[in-house]
Length: 142
Image 1 (cartoon, rainbow, N blue to C red):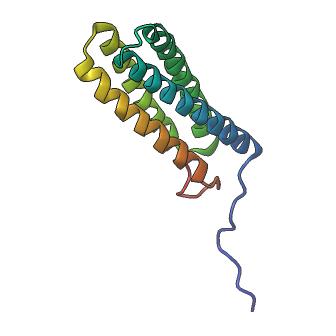
Image 2 (image 1 turned 135 degrees about the vertical axis):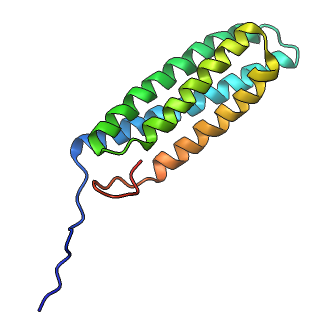
Image 3 (image 1 turned 60 degrees about the horizontal axis):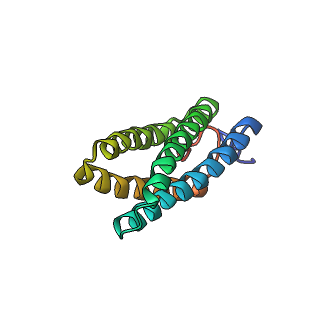
């Protein structure tokens, strides 16, 4: 008698694969934008006051990038029925929004530590989304 798997491994849909690729690209862009923000902030704090303008424009780029990533992860969640990536991205966007307003208010005691946390979060998300295997019906889905 031949043993047959009760549940064959499902293959990911084409849409899920495309969305995963899009989210991976957006995650890399977000990492670059956040690290650029940290660089501009460091230069500003070291006395290069002209960097504040770049830091302000970079804040918009980071926030809009976070929103695009959130849209991508929502699509990925809808396609794969796994909402982990969207939930984590939503937390990052909430943190970016809080950091934006803390920066505008001049509350550096909130702005700087939150920025460090965001930088760690986007890097961890990018590593996680690149390491994830996309299998429909699996518990390892992002």
